[in-house]
Length: 155
Image 1 (cartoon, rainbow, N blue to C red):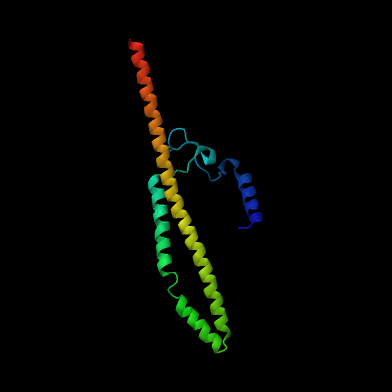
Image 2: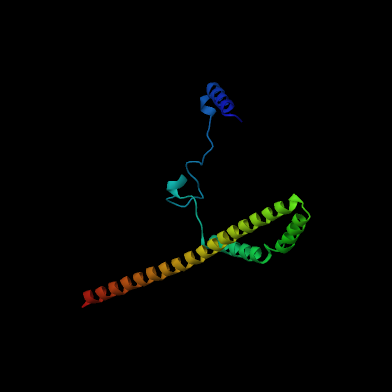
């Protein structure tokens, strides 16, 4: 739909019955939204849990392994074919060599991206585990300190 057509339909709808026009958006209140959650970026409707992150990391690692093991299966036969075609003075030989080079560059880029995602998920998991330990030890220290103050008051 062209912009002009949209404007025309919008104007005609507003002229017929302005109360009928409604924009697509989230309703003001949703029963399934946790308390305190608003709409849009400020409210935080996007949530991710640990299982989601683990699934992303595992998928990236599996893709990395699969591409690493099989991404170059056709390399030697493609190089041989490119060399034979070039020797026989077919321009297709040079083109096949270019395709093989681009495949190799793309494969390396994809392998790097998969490794980066997988490693980042592992790093994030370890960083949050460290945060959890720090928070738990801090809270338990505060509880111990509070207990000491409470014992001092009883005397």
